[in-house]
Image 1 (cartoon, rainbow over the protein chains, first blue to last red):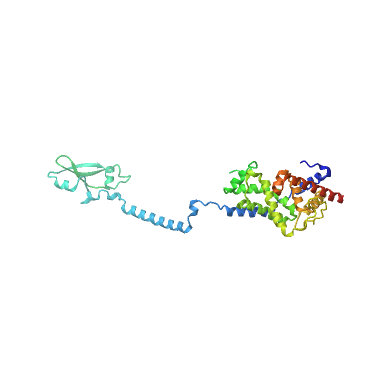
Image 2: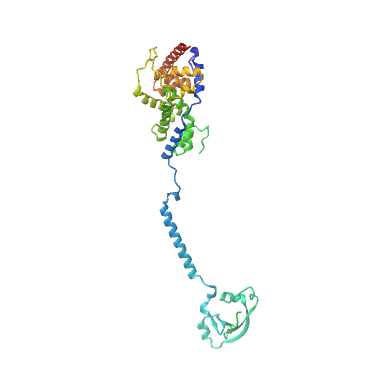
Length: 161
Length: 189
């Protein structure tokens, strides 16, 4: 400052400055300004917030229906363990007849022979033979139909229990 | 984004324009006090001073008052905007000023530092209240210069820019205003 304090004003201004330093704009001013700022720069909504609630409801409904249809379809078409090789497994006089080759091949065989044998139960589980922890170690008595060239054609299990 | 006290006004403005609310709040908190006190001393009404501060920052927010960092500091720009707003508010109640250039008579009407203005009640210091009262009797264009120079310690160049006069006019107004203040205050002793 290049004004000399010959008039003694500086001390008075110092006093006024000290007194006025306590004064600030009312808090309501800042509040109103920040509200104006929020209007000027609305918060950018994230992508999922931009989707209207009605669209979310439709999406949820369609998803639920799609999931139900999918579960139904999978259930309807899932292979049941007992149905594996259904076309080549049949009941025959209380026992199970399991074709190991096609029925045409078996019928065409001119000179088949029967051989008595025992088959591990675990190897028959895939063909639908009941398998429990109690009987898992017991072999199953069977008659094997063998072609003239020694090729196994079919099995007849005497008892699966 | 960070708004530490060392962040410059220009950076805060840039952040504010990109939507950073905390930058706008930091700018406001940094400058509202001096602007409010300037407006309060200048017009004598707390309500008007608050309106002026709000208008200044609203204009800054909306871009109505465009600040160019190449032309000076933000605080000087804000003082200029505040002064212009006060002049507009003053216009309807403008009265012939007694302390015109070259006129030593300074019987301008005292500003309404009344119930609407808590200033007189706040100023417990007698010396402060005396100088506040003497200031309020100065003509507005003298009051501007004195407040900006004595209370806000702005340079002649900044005051010249704010008041849109040349530096020589600032010097002469300040000199005359101080003389008038000294005369009035001496009369009270």
